[in-house]
Image 1 (cartoon, rainbow, N blue to C red):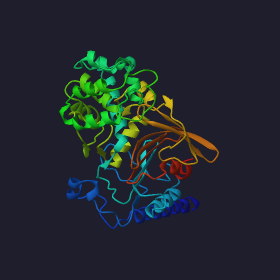
Image 2 (image 1 turned 45 degrees about the vertical axis):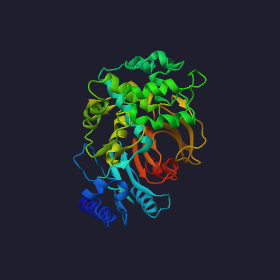
Image 3 (image 1 turned 90 degrees about the vertical axis):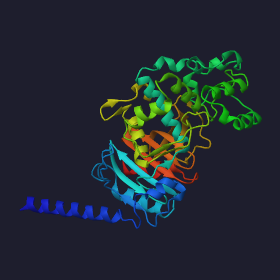
Image 4 (image 1 turned 90 degrees about the horizontal axis):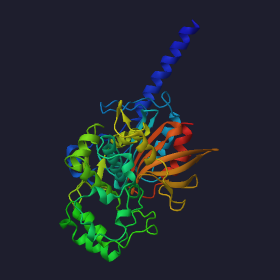
Length: 398
């Protein structure tokens, strides 16, 4: 009799939980963008009148494992409260918040112009995808880990090295991956290059860049947030069979099951390396999962574990001033291979975090100690996303 009562109580609890999840997932507009909205892009999507909040995300046959918040991890009540606050614009304006715990998507929410099938603009989060593409080239043997310490120009056979600025051969892949190429252009030179950018196809772009730069030395090879990722894209295009565009599609996007995306082409004819890519929030989660799994995806090694370790580790520290998305509990900002690093304090504990970051508020955040991969998209720069992680998301999983 006691056993029967326990079972009955459990069934009632599960049914009530399921009902609550369904009510929390209510949305007055379709959570999927229409075909017209997909063709028009983000700015053509109407804003949701109410948020879509799901603590038991649906399996979509997209390669992502799903779970239930509260059962597969996380304090469901805390997550729902945070989502309601986001819906009421108490933390800035967000488009989506997705949380995976130990490999399972357990929380999925959309706001404003966020839609489950709408590729969201990425800005500088794109840089991480470029870094991962280089890692894929290494995994397939087109480059080696030792090549990371070799000069970028040694892979670009179309350059006339006699015309390059002094020190061009000091730019290694490692330095270009950490924004330390040392390339320095005056504002006038940048403007001049922009005016002729459509004429500079392929390696002509790299040639023009390295001809015009001031001499490169140890003094100039300090962290400077600029277009170094395009040097990496030049190398990818030079070493892989076919084109960089085809390589990225076949060897990464197709492997990850990413179909609904936009990856624009730069004036030089190569895929954009630092911005102008659109990905759905669920597909962003795949990139984070790939990194969290040390380069493995569904049993297949896509990227060397050693490369991932370098990519998400701080290769340098950039200081605690002007941390993008930061706050009082975010410190020790560093930089890997286009991945940002920061320490998040939650209560008395400190957690190491890694994040892809894009201006306007796109994040892929990894907190390995808690088994978390968190995706955020937003349409405003002022969101303190990392601070929100420290204050509200981490406590739900501690």
